[in-house]
Image 1 (tube, rainbow, N blue to C red):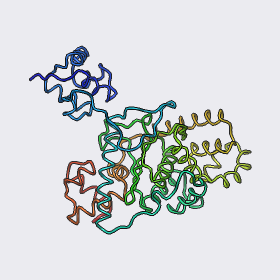
Image 2: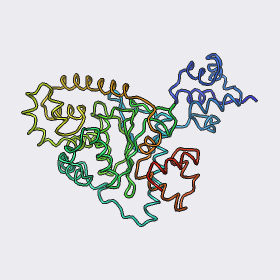
Image 3: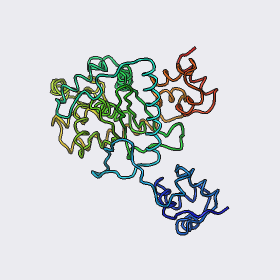
Image 4: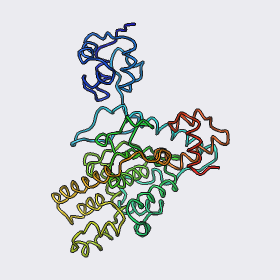
Length: 384
C-alpha cells in the first residue's frame, strides 16, 4: 500500500536523526535513489514509512503532518558548540529527557504519598551569592569535603562517594551513555554532557556516561549547583568551561570550589609545582581527576591558557585510552543500577513488592521487558 506524505517532513525526519541519504538507505534496506525520490515526491510504501519512523526514532504520526513540528527541549537549553547555541535537539536527547522526567514524576508522587518533606536546599541560592559560601554549603549537605575524599583510595572511588552523598541528600543521580537500554543508541558527548531537573521533592541529575569519568566528576558538581539555584537545564561544557551563559559560569565557579577549594589548592601548589608530576600529587591529595585539577589551576592563574589547553588535551587522550582498554560488556544489573540511580530503583522495587506500582509501570520506568530480568535486578538490589 502506497502513502503520500509531505516531502519536507520526510527530509526533516532523516535530518533530525542526523542521517545522510545513504545512511538512511542502508538502515532501511533501500537504495539512496529511492530515498531521494521519497523526499521529492512524498510517495512511498506504508511499510517503508513505518521502518523510516522506527530507524529515525520519529513518532509515526509525525510523518503525516503537513509541516515539520518544532521540537523544543522541555527544560532550558544552556548548550553551546564552538561558542554558538545549539538549535535542534536530537531524538536521543529528547528521549533521555523524557525518560528522566517520567521517573522524576513517579518518584515525586512516591515521596508525597509517604509524607516526605520538601528539600530546603533546592532553589536556596542566587546568582549574586558568594561562590565560596555556596560551595561550602553544598559540601556540608552532601557530606563530601576534601578530608572525606582524601580517605578514598583514588578519585574513581571519590566519584562514587560523590554520587552516594548526593543521593543521600535527596538528589536522584542517573548516569548512562545510551537511550534506555538500547546499546545501538549511544548518546553524544558533543551534544550534551548532563542535565539537571530541579524539583522541591525529587531533584534529578543526569550525566552522560559516554564522557570520561574524569570529566563526569566536574559535570556532577556543576549540575548539582543547578539544583541549589532551582534552575533546570541541559549543559554541554567544553573542557569544563561554558562561556556564554551567566548561570553556567556561576555553576562552574561553584563546582570548581566544591571539588578543589582555592584556599587549600594555594597551600598545596607551592610544594606540588616542584615535583616531577605535579598533577599526580595533587590528585592524590584532593582525589579529583587531572582534568578537574587543570581547570582549577587555570582558574587561579597557576598555569597559562596555553598550558591548560595542551595538558587538558593530553589528559583527555589518556582517559580515552584507558576507557578503550577497559571497554567490555560489563554486568547488566550493575549498569542498570547506575542508569536508574540506586535511590530510585530501590523505591520502585519496594513499591512493586508492596503492590502500589504495577509490574507494567515498573518495566516501563526501568526500560526492561521480562519478569526474569526484573527478578534478577531485585536480587542485585539486595531484596529478599
